[in-house]
Amino acid sequence: MHVRTGGCLCGAVRYHVDGPMRPVIACHCHQCRKQSGHYFAASQAARSNVEIAGGEAITWYRASDDAERGFCSRCGSALFWNWDGTDRLSILAGSLDDATGLALIGHIYTAEKGDYYRIDDGLPQREGGCHGDPVTDLTGSAEWPA
Image (cartoon, rainbow, N blue to C red; front, top):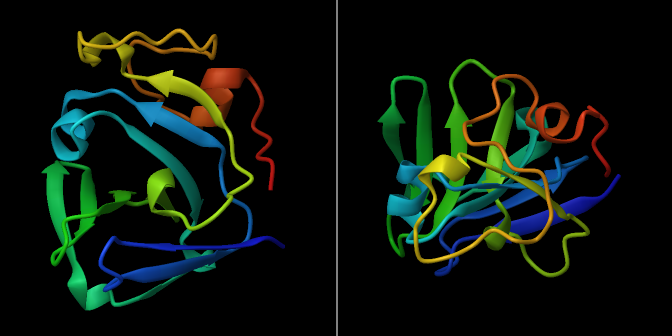
């Protein structure tokens, strides 16, 4: 199994993931752009494979009726996105340390993207979100590379 580590800018929050992570998906929705200043690029892991140190420094912001966003209350680093009722935790790819071995596989909520950039990398795009498994919805395959 591949172990990946990450954390916030100031180091108050650290985490490690012991197990597979989903390929990275870029979300261009209005909320992600407002929180990050651009768009979110996030992977995902089984919650049972994620260990967080410094959790007391995480502030959870309820962004909608069914999801919350976790960020460091000290330095403001966006770290997590948590969809209620799932056993998975989305992890912002930029918060991972070192080389991740992960790859961007597509874009969601492109209808809400900012007007100041283009998406021209040739990867799959969805105007809205993914209602099932995002990898399957974007690529047609549910297989997650390690």
